[in-house]
Image 1 (cartoon, chains in turn purple, orange):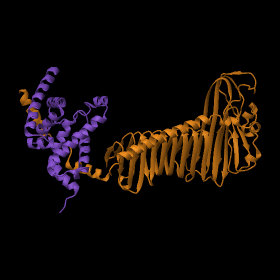
Image 2: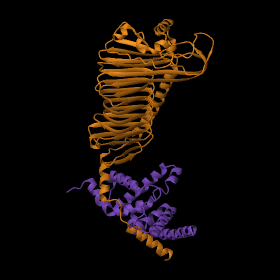
Image 3: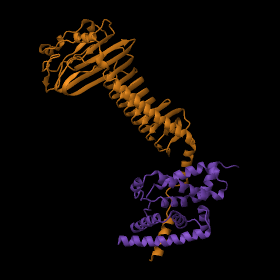
Image 4: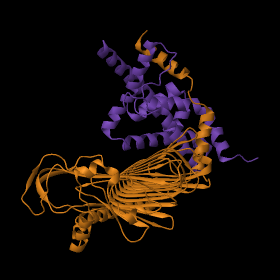
Length: 170
Length: 407
């Protein structure tokens, strides 16, 4: 029995749906509405799905598409408009969290934005989306050592940023 | 709790967060996108953009040139024509004003079976004396006139009214009309549909001047009608006035029609807004070169054209062609029953369609703007072109510089 294009796509996508949403939510925090990015990414990914030679490359393909779409959106927006947008979509926090935790998560999101793109992406994929190092290697097309280095450096930078943010608040 | 633990705790909290979208949502997005065909190639888009920009520039130049060159057309009347106009104007005096029903009316005119002139004479007589070619006079009040000047020719199916002292008021009825045509240069038009058998027409023209001046011509506005095979043609012609001196002018020209159902309406105005409301006509064609068009509660074949102006539509149904060169197109509660078109060169298009998307074949394009479908059953956007659905009803919405939104 032969599966349709949509069925094949969904078979690969369904297991990573929740992780992908968490990634989008964190990645675009404060800049765009995450559902827009998800929608655009999935539509484009589905359209170009036939171009993937191997199903192993699906994650790399999906997250690579997100990165390109995000870069495209940022390029189209004028700088002053991006500044206006910042903070507009800071509403994706979980309502069940305590107010204090919501503020902390908000700070964490902001600190993640301060990191360089690859490091930030690596941290989000590992710590928030829950992908394994091996999967991240595939997504980022990097070696294991490079991924581990990014995670280590990223955490250190995050801690430092969060401390300085706390000091500012105090 | 140290920073490291706190960070881990936050990561855990985020990791445990449940997704707010479902796989079903994703499936619906993908299915919707599958209906959308691939956009045109880049070269085609570039050619299209240049084409639209060129068309826009050419249209603007033509309109500008036309307006510039057609400024003093009416002042080139022959002396004989001017003499005829003057003879047709009847003198007004206070006694006549008070006895409106005893005004002398041309016998031939009064015998026309389908026209019943209603004379509006409730205004004061002239407050000043005017001398042709005389010295300048000071005039502080706006010109007021009571003159009603019917003038008919020998044929029973045509006639006209001339303004006197810069005013003209006409209120009349036409019966057995199947098609109403208006041709005029400066006029705000209102066409209202109603449950009636005849066409009611009300016209008000008034030119007010303040300042120190004198003028040569009288009867600067002419309203005429012609009836041929149930086709009633109304024309408004305004002649340029020669004011010598210093003056401030304000001109009012409003023509109002009340028409029965199922007649064809064609309006063609060079300058002025057009408002059509409640028409259940077979054909409604509206054109104005400079002015906005408002259409509300109209059904049938509807053509709305303006060169420089906005088009506003509400509760329309039928085959709709809505075209403007420089202006926005706004539509609410639009129900399409045949292939339709909404075009603007420089402006936005925002239309709320009542038809289900499955019935439509949408061709949306913007050369330098965005295209968006924002409906409950489909949300889709693009930076240049969208082709959605394979329904029977083809709907084209195109703009060169602006947004296209279908709701």
